[in-house]
Length: 285
Image (cartoon, rainbow, N blue to C red; front, top):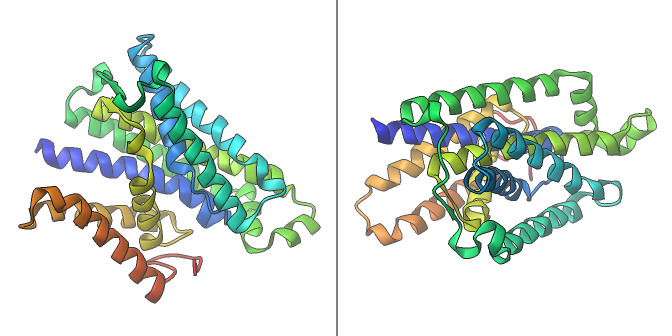
């Protein structure tokens, strides 16, 4: 039972990540490749507060979300002059900065040794309790993102995705809207990072790097870019496949590589034959 609950918890956290990147990529059209790194910043913010300063969980949670929002807004600063593939490269470069800082700043992050002994909140010590926390966080995230998408601000984001120049001609403040969008997406990433830190009770820079980014993008594209419900379906399918691999009669040391290979094949298949995913509204080809 604990195993199933753990799978469900990680699926909820992945759902939060995918909803956030869907807001940036699917709704606004910003190819944001630094989303996972922002989750890492939120995780490290909470981990340091909980282990070094022994802060209450609520304080660490708020700080992790705030750190994600601030970094997301900072990442959005180049959007005035940088678009498209150049913006994707800029956000990926920001992710490299996170990785190098997390590995090098040993006095703060523990470097390659990471941070150990991160305490769980007292009200979520058991997996059954933690699942309620993760599910509630996912529900709140979905409600907030859905509210944003359906609001006049969300329609501005959609206009930016479809034709930013036309949106500017009609008087929309596109630069401010993109920065606000990335701040909201960053806050969701920070939330996911905090939950990851207290769930595993350990942090290492590699936890928020390319394999995680690829998994999140695959779930997004599989479920459908621009579809919030599709995001959760993509996470559910990918989680089921990822856990199903564990039961394949395969040498344990190769299971990680097998999981990544299957993920890559799913991504390529979707891009080639169904670029909008299962429920998508935007063609990603």
